[in-house]
Length: 234
Image (spheres, rainbow, N blue to C red):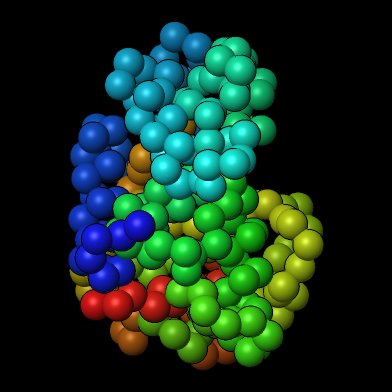
């Protein structure tokens, strides 16, 4: 149980702390750009101190009765090391977001999950008034300017995901937490980007929106489709 109210400042500070812990990696290249080939020997997620920390994301970010709560950056719930081919199955980006929300004090009001689609769908249900009590609300890219502590989410499906199609059965997505804005750019941090905790910079309009009024998204690198407004206590 959280000792203090759910805090926007704490969520941002926690995300930045984890980014620093993993070496302050920044990647503003398109996701298809060629990078360093990841092997078992150079995988940042398996480095000493890193795989254990990812285990804490799983342990604290997931409910204790889920098998994922016993995973680490390179082990399943039985302690077996998984190969690089299995990395997608053990992807920890949603565990990272869940860890940040839990540690910042969301308590039982955030839908912790190993899949981003879970809390994206809950956020849209909140927007539609079909559920209540959660701290995430889905907003359109051209209508709401994300603040530090909010989440921005991109589709990872071949089937293009849009705000209008939400909620939808489980789909592949990725969410980053906004940690700051500098003029025409948002700084965002996400887990399991390049196998580490990574900062990206995302262009926004003069009003801080990810898309123009006509819906055209400014960032051509990623298929952003929804902002999750987070209802912090302070």
